[in-house]
Amino acid sequence: MRSIVFIIFYLVLVPNGYSQHFDISGKVSNEADSAIANVHVVIKGSSDGVHTDKNGNYTLSVKHGDILTFSYLGMQTVDVLVKNENTVLNVKLIPQQELLDSVVIKKRKRYSPKALLAEYHQNKNLIKTSMGIIDKDRASFSIQIIDGKNLIPVGTDFLYSLQNLYPSMHVDREDKNLYDPKVYLQKWSYNSQPTAIFDVDGVIYEQAPTFLEVNDIDRVAILVRNGAVSRYGTPGIGGVIIINTKSSNSMANAGIKRHYDNSDLRDSLYQVIKSPSIYAPEPPLYMKTFKKAKSESHALALFEKDKKAYLNAPYYFMDVSDYFFNTWGQKKTSLDILAFMTKRFSTDVAILKAIAFKYEVLNEPELAFQMYLRILNIKPRHSQSHRDISNAYAQLGNYKNALSRYFNFESVIRRLDSLDFSASEVSSVMKTELSNIIKLHGKLLKISDEVVDRNIESPGTRLLFEWNNDQAEFEIRVVDTENNYYRWTHLRSEKNTIKQFFFDKTSTGDRQIQITYHGNRTSGPTYLKTTLFFNYGKHDQKSESRIYRLFEEGEDIQLMTFNPSKSTLSN
Image (tube, rainbow, N blue to C red):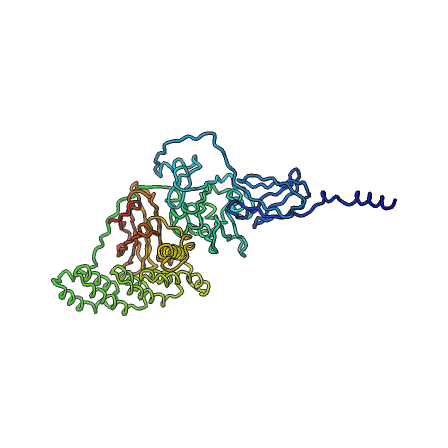
């Protein structure tokens, strides 16, 4: 009898094995096996649930027969029956598929930027970028545009809400500074994970603009892979998040300094500007002496007679060097004068860099390399010095040393605590040139095909500006045939001396490069070198460099005209 009572007591008070609670754990990911954070995991028919953590993991107390519902905005909801033997349950979510009742094909009309601007507020498929307006309906690449109304003010910044609307995005907040998270838009198969860059009202940011308020965002567009690279070049390899705000007040209140003025572009205020004069510099007065020369020997005699009076005027020798090469075809005399300048002004970086430019145009890459090496020894902590010597190695065909320099640049930055950080553009240029060497010469250097294929080809046309004096101040304009233009300004307060632009094959028609020069705080000129690359990143890549002597202040000058789609260059 006691045994029967004990059995009844046990059955009543001890839970049945099929009704016992136990912990179930797992990971939620997408089709690309990337973890999805903040997925809502709930027991169907109850309020019991949890959210997945940043790694997509969850743990929940359940019992046999429960149904777990996995839901996430933009993804299909999944229901899974819990069986008693399940203690680990991994779930993969797939995007929601919207079915269209019908498809209407319409003839696409070509809209001018002015017309797109007028339509911007009504057409949510338009987004303003640092290189003009993108129309999602006409774009040749994939682009996702998110209405700012769908962003919810949760968390410490807008990325929390954006992450829910773009599940492939991963935000790394593990660093000590929670306000400087790293954003990844896609999964990469190798260790180097390129982060996304941000285009906010036409201003490019490498760090996430966490100062933005959700309520101030009008719309957001996300570009990845070819779409990002075709418009932003190699810096866009990690993808681009484009943000149009309702106003620029949030940036002003945050104390954000714009490093260049592209307000014309940001507001899409396209204007017709006056035609500048074609570049044709007037020779300095001291060069009139050489008009008397009736022969090369006579010109040399005039030079020997006057040069002592100009020993402290470096650019006199630069101009005379040009004169002997251009007028008499005397390359040796021209090089001898440049060598004299090097000894005379051996510690003046601006002058040495101008000489290096001349050596490059005279097809003397070894002499240019020696000049950049001198500059590196004078300014070993200057970012530009490291880029220039890396590029000089590449010009010599020594791609192995060029790669080594490029790869070691970041470790040098970490090792030298006072290295110049003022030129983020230098880092961007180095990444572009590193990728290009790997793409074009990777097999020769015995780099694996996997690594070579990772380096996405840059757009068809790359335009590179370099100048010798970091105190120079000027404005560059890129103008198309409809007089729509993009403007970039270099200020004296910025120490970088390099800038690159990209144009894809869809950039039809001619582009004029115009400049307005504002001086360099010295009595001498500024030497500007432009290099135009066609088919950049491809095996039929070609380039042409020109040097411009800028002296007259305030004058609008047209430097060149080129056509990205036809790969042509003219004055």
